[in-house]
Length: 261
Image (cartoon, rainbow, N blue to C red; front, side):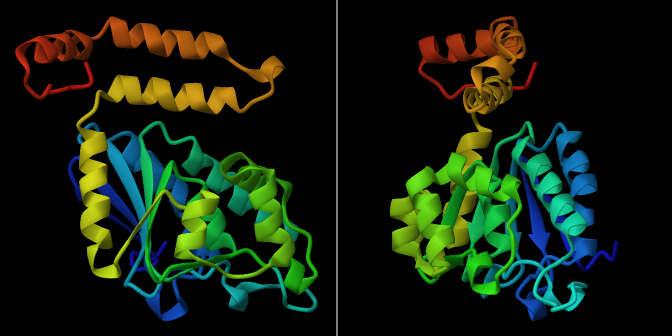
């Protein structure tokens, strides 16, 4: 993978995962998305990193979606099914990251870029951001995994609106639909994202992992839920030094210093 395609910038406790193809509106080439698992593994294994922020290079686009120059179908309108499946499998890796994940969204966020944004925990956008997923305008089938993620994140009614209209959704409407959780002026977006990431990073890491896993299990069918995994993570919180530190800090009316121990 070329270093220029996908970047990791670390500012402990934050890591930035950057789609770095600004000349292509950060389109998701195969080379780019195939590099995501290794980047995630790096971040997961770095004890100094507590929050991951995904963004696109520059301020014109988060990502315009899959790179049309790489489409190999007969009518050149979509990537072959195997490539689509690979992308959504990798986005599932993003969704299952044990550390909190944010998306910082400037400008264009469409197609696979919108799918990538929906795979993180919390999304912040600039006032000029615009969202769309447009398979209905291209006559192609869309992977079930992408539909499922949209329904989980937005609810069925908003997922229908997004996919059936294939229209562009501006930032304020995206906020009401749950596509994003915060909207800021473009010049303030990075500072707001960093501030939120630092606030989350100041919380107890073991508790954050338990909360993320609990939320994940809650959206699975009851028969598929691994509540034993959740209970083990919860017990790990109570057995931790961080729990003792949290109680001491509360009693002493000070900010706790969590060490993930």
